[in-house]
Image (cartoon, rainbow, N blue to C red):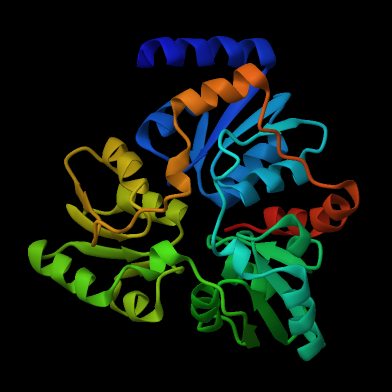
Length: 302
């Protein structure tokens, strides 16, 4: 059955001139079927550069929105329209406008995990891979960082500016507890602890390395270590194991799962290509205002 679905997807990709982009947190079968697997910044760049007419975005809604903003002439499909992001829902336009009014001298740096409408009220977006560089690049001495308070806290440690943080967070990363990480270290002596900056400060403080998902993948390839405790969504372990046979990768907890990222499967990818739905679009006025903030993000290296 899986072979039939995979073959049908390949046929439809060719006939529709489609490309499949998948986030590192997607399930293994979707990652394996994708033309490119990466983090938010990498996928944004691929969406901007692709010559395909159709982008099948295997991720969550804000990612597909970003692709639609960058490439308005392309059809952007999200195989499950219910794949949302709780963090993105923690900041809306009225809330952001209220924060901006409270900090009128601050440049607004918005994590890409946010809606198109929020991006439209933003000076520049960032991802976890380039957040430090982005905040260093803005001329203002004050930064209003939304929505992720934990990423913002980590960036503020590395950038000599005044930060005002919104109160959003990623529930999946917040479920990773320091005690679980320490227990995993006892079970795997000598293992390198990698933490995503969406983790709480307590977890970040006991990590050996704080990295985006692309940074984790790169560090795992380059490291001479044989074992890694990976404090982020467990979907990344599939790619790590494929790229590093012989090395051990473990999650600190069985709860390192984003239910939204797991909504997409191969059948839904196939149905999206067959029906050319669900299609993600962004109103022209919103997209126009958000595009500049996204393009400025994409232009800054990680």
